[in-house]
Structure formats: C-alpha cells, structure tokens
Image 1 (cartoon, one colour):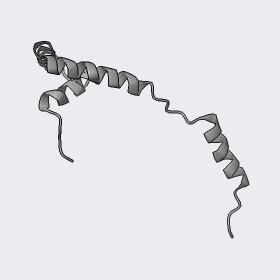
Image 2 (cartoon, one colour; image 1 turned 90 degrees about the vertical axis):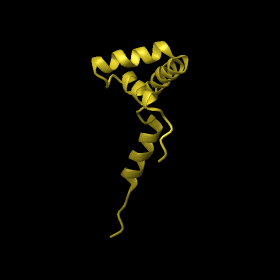
Image 3 (cartoon, rainbow, N blue to C red; image 1 turned 120 degrees about the vertical axis):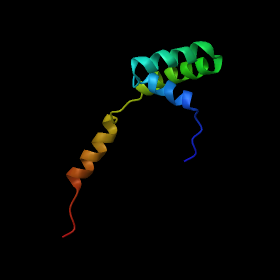
Image 4 (cartoon, rainbow, N blue to C red; image 1 turned 30 degrees about the vertical axis):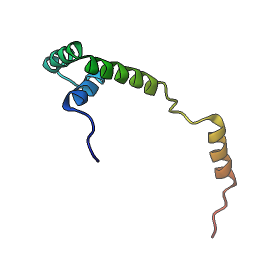
Length: 78
C-alpha cells in the first residue's frame, strides 16, 4: 500500500484519537495553529471521527430474525 499521508498528518490522526504524549500534543498543536492546511486536515479528521462514531454497529432486527429463522429451519444433511 502506498502511503499518501505526511508524517504530520499521521501525527494529527493520532492526536484526534488521543494516542499522543503531552510533548507530542504540544508539537502537533503548534503545527495545527501555524498551518491552515494542517488545521483543515485536523478539522476534517474531527468531523470524520464524529461521523464514524455515529455508525450503527448493531444489526437490524430484520437481519437477526432472518438468521434465527434460518437456524430454526436448518436440517443438516446426514
């Protein structure tokens, strides 16, 4: 896989997910404050993370019912 993010962008992603140390936080915050491209990338990352947090991770009731129905009606070939 070809890496398309810069080192700073990778650090910003880590920052968004709280995976950076206090000293890294300080450096990243300086990078965000001093460069509009980094600020835009940071804001985009925050928005994407928020949207991803809204993704439904539970199957719909209809999906579960189909699985249960299949299981109840399953007859193994012997």
